[in-house]
Image (cartoon, rainbow, N blue to C red):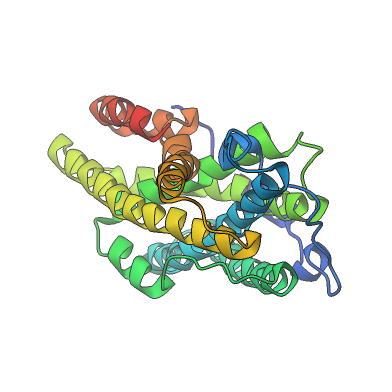
Length: 303
């Protein structure tokens, strides 16, 4: 057993960690645009030689907006998936049902929180920042896949959130305090969701033969390929917003180089950092050692 998670303990932890949107993002909250929003390990904006320090910070803030908006988008397909997983359990274990419904309610809260952040950012930043979507289209594409593949993607995302906050955000004193607080409170609840996701993956994998496990891994990778195309588009949108906000056009060779560099930064943020998380790889190994090895071979491309 690679973990000791159970529904009763996760539910109790979720209740203790609960918070209200108004306490995290109250009316009158102000973002500090004199600071960066994203840690450099994810943003990768400080290494760009042809931008000024102010321009690097500007691009970093655009990345911060993208980060929370895309998390909101992802949670829009997590929510119906969790509800669909809970529905067959309604006449079963009460604790399990309550834990899954708590999970769903918290995801709905996160969607609301990130929409409020988007409104605050847009009003304060003064330059429109486009993001991929619509969420319904992306969600439909993801959810048409094998439920085990989708559950693995969600597990990937939840553990990725843990590594981002604990490894990069928590001890970075240079970040805007409000943005940092949003990530902290998101992490507080996602820490429990990752445990529930682990239990969902195990339930969906139970009884499958190796061929069906391998098929689900293939579909997980198909979803990743689909999302990677979206990340390439998002890198372009981010640079479009940067040029508008900075009031200048980048020379075409510079723009192409920066777009490739930022696409790779997004790939690491949303794909690579989740694929190598030890908790994620531990679950893969538990259901299929060959699946773990297959993902380990692919992950370096997203570093």
